[in-house]
Image (cartoon, rainbow, N blue to C red; front, side, top):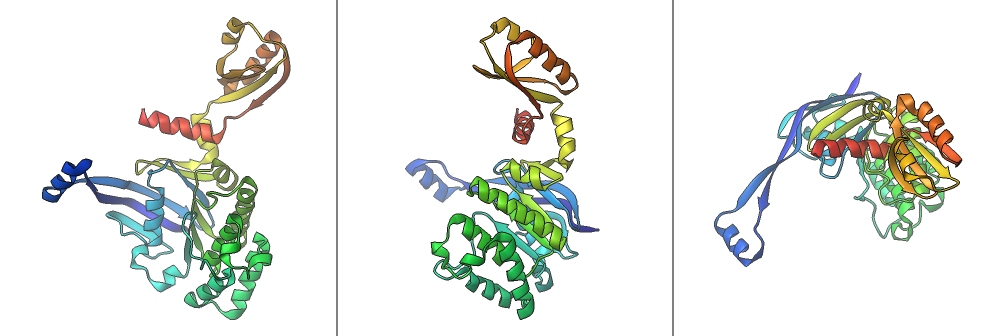
Length: 326
């Protein structure tokens, strides 16, 4: 069953362009110049109940605009959007009580008050019963390991602790649909891992439908089987992450630690050199011949260690976007 349905969604902005300097200011008083920007350009997709989908793309690709249209914050220029059977921009109360939008760069916590105060406020806004509120706070604080700072003023919390409280505030009504826009931005590696585990557990426990945007490919790789890739407002790929890797990365990376510096001419015969900083040497070879290539490298060079691996997801995504823009 499709929880999110998007048909030919477009969102266009009219933006003002001003020439620099005093003369530019005078000119703008007489005749302003405008241009139309297609933030989202005729995209269509569906998300089934309980799916955790990665929504990825570079800055300005249209990810956040799409999420704002799906959550009802923006009115589309054209197209149709349905979430849980509702039209999001109608902003009906039954719809709003079943969704949540978490933006890593925005906050809803009161700076001088403990996070629990915001939780209590949201309890009243979403009309959560007392028993349900206690149950959800207990479950979320346990999963997020937040029991120790529920009653500490927000201004005294670390960035990671504040992000945990932001998540609790956004999830206090147990939404069925969760839009996460860069939830791990600005967090250290350990905190990123903890939040990924939380998102995974929340998805499993509540069968929540989650659409996740992130610039950290570790988030997407660990959490999402399916990804939707967007750039310049258009969808480039919609499918399994594993299929994307097979389609756009038919190669493997062979990393070598050398005992001695080799003859440069020998290296050129062994494969495409991705990087070489003695004693570390990295080749990029075709996946189907990677075993043969590795054997040839071991026969030709004096090697202390060798490792064969798939390319990083970041490299694959970067190659796709750079190819499209070329």
